[in-house]
Length: 241
Image (cartoon, one colour):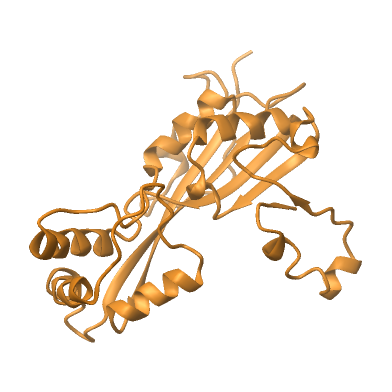
């Protein structure tokens, strides 16, 4: 288990599951990737990253480091916030700041486009990629509740060029803009969109499965599906020898 925060890393080290698993906890920077355990090549069968990659600045190099850490036929599974996450908050803050301050500051951290994740992983060497996207919209009673939730999640803005403090005047201007542009007309809540990007990639090794050659299938996909798009019976696609 790797985390740059020692407090978070050892938060649950007394729970019963620790006696059932052989866990080694390493305090290290996931982006620097310079701990001895991490720099050892072909060391892990599987690497899992859950909702931390959106804090990485050099994502291409991090993917490459993960790839080098995997054994042949090893797999990387990850998830991250991406795309239009918190777009409602971003646009509302920008309009309010233009009105009250005459300019805008970067108050929501940038997120990688979900369509770019696959190409970045492919450039790092991963094969048999699977990238999926899911959006979850959470309703909040007001802007303060949303900002407090983000703070408690540890998902505050960490841009190096710290923007000016968010004043009471700016908050008072943001909430009505948020409600007018994005508010739910039925219950009056403020929606906040979280876009999750899920990814799986493999490091190829000996006898690594390869996709069949284009045009080598023996059955048409149209013949394999019924009128409702469901698979009929047992379908096998074979490769011409």
